[in-house]
Length: 216
Ligand SMILES: O=C(CO)[C@H](O)[C@H](O)COP(=O)(O)O
Ligand SMILES: [Fe+2]
Picture 1: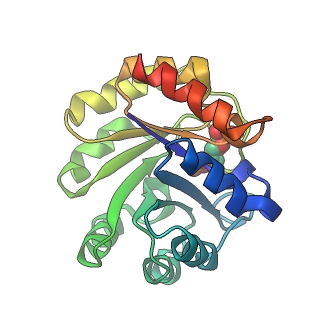
Picture 2 (picture 1 turned 45 degrees about the vertical axis):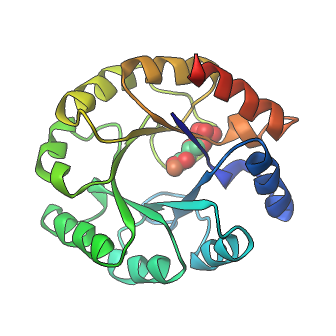
Picture 3 (picture 1 turned 135 degrees about the horizontal axis):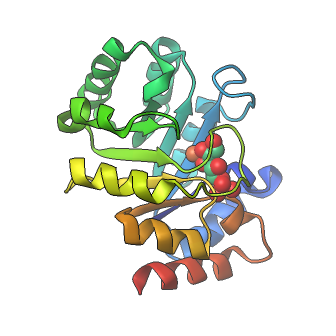
């Protein structure tokens, strides 16, 4: 079980301190939500944040969740910035180019993931299963932190697990102590949590709480 906190809801002016606090509590992977103001109606980080992250925390994993259609420009930039994982949306490009971009990431030594938004048919995973290091199932509509976990997510996780018995399945959106347990039971093993980790008083306390639930 892996917890990958999303820094989207962290305090931007104290980001390094908050990442350090989570790392001191055992976190090794951070989820960086890249939003382009077009594929989703919100704007967030660019490649500079990833290179700053890797410079300050070379031993921690930078996982980029790329919410953009502009793969030709942004993928090389995020590869160059030192991303360890890059996850692209199935919905973000013409389907016949997805395989090409997954291969491009592999050739450049970056682990790759395919992201499925809530309305996308889980069966599309059949086509890409041999190319993927991980799958990311959105449990909210992409664009904003702090949304509610969608009830139908459990059935989608089970369907993905049936197609991908051995691949890490990550869930993203509305993960908290209760919903993490639902997602885990359904077959998820990587958990993105944003507002639950960074939106409350103590990062250490939130990490400890989620860790103990997932270790049960
Ligand atoms: O991809 C995302 C939104 O598009 C975020 O990773 C996600 O929403 C995390 O935030 P929270 O845990 O607060 O829901
Ligand atoms: Fe995300």
